[in-house]
Image (cartoon, rainbow, N blue to C red; front, side):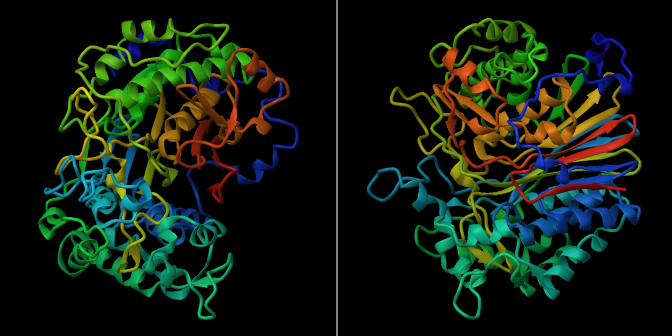
Length: 575
């Protein structure tokens, strides 16, 4: 990478030298260390221990990080169906240790060919209610996660594709204990949990909803996995399962327009990741329509501050919040599917533009909500009105050769659209499009619906390298629109504040958007909340979308060190 020549040489040992500092978390917030893992050569960090074990089994059999990703996703789709699955989509970054290059894979769902910008308008010409739209047949896009994994595994795998589903198939057939988060989602007031398919799947013989620890079985899922193992993505995109998908989506209420031709035409995308220097590192993410370039913009703005000198104090969090506001203002105006609209990625990441955005940060007090900038290549775009819910997960893997995967995968909101075929839920990813295709003045939204288009995403799985192209870390999170802020926090904590991975992920979350600051006030160190308030940053509880589920792995001189977000059920484990 030619831009890396501008960075001073630095060995791996120096990357992880951390100085002393005041506590960054409130007293009593350190029970998260049980989530952390270490390992000399290989590791998996994911949102459920059963998925972690499936990935480790593949790695120990000589599989690559991508091989293990297939196994991890297959298990997560079974034990965490509220977050991801065979019927959803994903973005993935892959580090190849031999070439020291990072590739990006796009398994984002696509809209049916017949979809129009008025997709979510009712017969009366008015916009649908969001909850109504999420469970409609119109909400589902063509699923892409399996096709994406198949493409990546052909390029980076070591084991046979049909060997990677054994653990998930055995769990589905023989039974698994219902995880707490799955049981809570099944019993929640989410509209998807009230759909007939979800009720049937999650109701026990005694008529009660499943409880944590109850034995669950899903023989239909096992049968689907056997088909995928034998046929690859064609098992979903052609043939009997494809016919079931189309038939289920064309049922009311508000049936969709997906056809067998839409499914058969799906193609995942692959290419170079978008990489930019950040201090002595290089951070790589997928291109738009992912949220990756927005994370890079946030880092570029923060690079022009002294946030590294304010490790976890009020000023450090203040700088973080103001850079976040600028980042989100641009992202919400300009991001969409680059196959359909011009996304000004290069302009947003140009040094002169980042200089100008950073100068808008008042060091002492937060001003009014920032407006979008005017990066080179930006057209006239309407403000985006997309409200992204959250039903997403993230995992990171490093194999014993040093290859790495950072993958964020989703069904959009809890249990997708609540419709189930062949043992898995279908996504409702099209609700990530802007419901309103134009502003009152006629300016088009970059993220308006169109046939064959991929909706904008916040998913931003990151891989960090040193200036020589050696792996430093893999990290990412679910969280709806908050993903960008969650990932930015983790990267700042790792790279600027020099925290170990587990401590970085456990830090309080802060999502700054316009005039709203969503956060976890009780988790900050003493004095931070009051210090932020004195600067005009008043923290509110909660977040946009869903809470974080950060998972990551870092390379240290002593080996791998992983972390799992204490807000979820995951672990990091290595060998």
